[in-house]
Figure 1: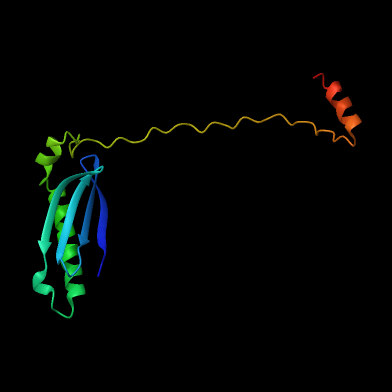
Figure 2: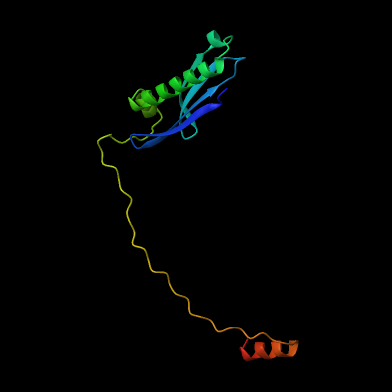
Amino acid sequence: MVGGFNHNFRYRGHMFHVQTEDSGVKKAEITSLLYSGGTILARHTSTYEDLRDLTDVSELVEERMKEQHKQMLRDLKDGGFDDRIAAMNIPLTDDASPVEKPVEKPVEKPVEKPVEKPVEKPKSLRELVKLYLKAGR
């Protein structure tokens, strides 16, 4: 059995997610969900009880899942959920509106750090104290 299908789909400037899952032969249902963020906007559930006892049930269920998943994407693309989307106050852009291009920023030259003198390593505690005092701390 196929676990499911997931697609992110940009429609009129907004990203939606379509998910289709098989509940397993015991329940024999295929469920497709349309999400915006974490909110479910639409659900379509179909049964495949008629396929339960067939030997090639896995392949047949996978085909139905694919078709149901594609149909949910087509319905979204064709405006079939526009009323629900509007009711959720999800902002959509017109299909004809120009796509905003990201503003290109010039690459800034990295600031070069001054080269530091190598630090003298003291050989004894006495030398460490002298270096400390010499540094004016």
